[in-house]
Amino acid sequence: KVEIVRSLHQLNTRLFSYHRFFGAIAPFVRRVNEQQGRPARVLELATGFGEFSLRCHALAARKELSVEITGSDIVPAYIERARAEAQARGVKAEFKVLNAFALDVEPGAYDVVLVAQSMHHFSPGQLARMVAEASRIGARVFVGVDGNRSLLLLSTIPAYGLFFGGRGRFDFAHDAFLSTRKFYSEPELELVAQLGAPEARVAVRTSHPGYSILTAEFPEKAS
Image 1 (tube, helix red, strand yellow):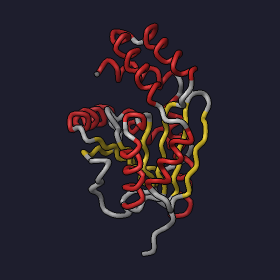
Image 2 (tube, rainbow, N blue to C red):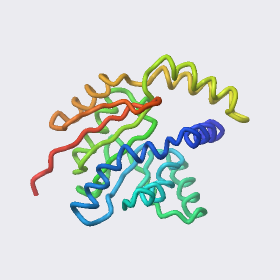
Image 3 (cartoon, rainbow, N blue to C red):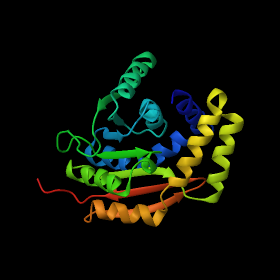
Image 4 (cartoon, one colour):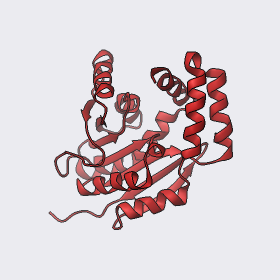
């Protein structure tokens, strides 16, 4: 598992994927910065080892934006590792053990809920539940970024794993092949989000090369 994650991290670095993940949430971060005059509070679900959350402050600073980032996962070992890495790097990022299907957070605690590169790990019902939870806790928007379902990715990502995956290249190539087969199509993502939050303004777009970006913006709740 660790070698697979390392190989994925190398791929993300080479493709500037972390920059693109932040780019997906940047318009909403900017809106909070400008309208509220404070950092945007971002909650990342299914953060795994937390590499995006660990980089989020630096990515925001490059765009002259301000964020407070919390990475979360249901696996305590992942959160412990991410906390240790944050301390070792001197990074200001918080990590919590949270169930993405029943978020135990204060209403209004987060502006943006993000799922990056892991939507394919969840069933349609589970993903719809995550969107519904983002709405329930008073977030402004749910943002999901994942691989785009295509024959190109089905062939190129496993091949990358075999040639550049390091010690875990065979495991990474196998995992990549299974993952690319499970990517949602963009119409499927739109439908799932609408099922999770019928009141939301849902949009799905392609981010070339290789990603689909889902946004579900929720109407402001009356105080």
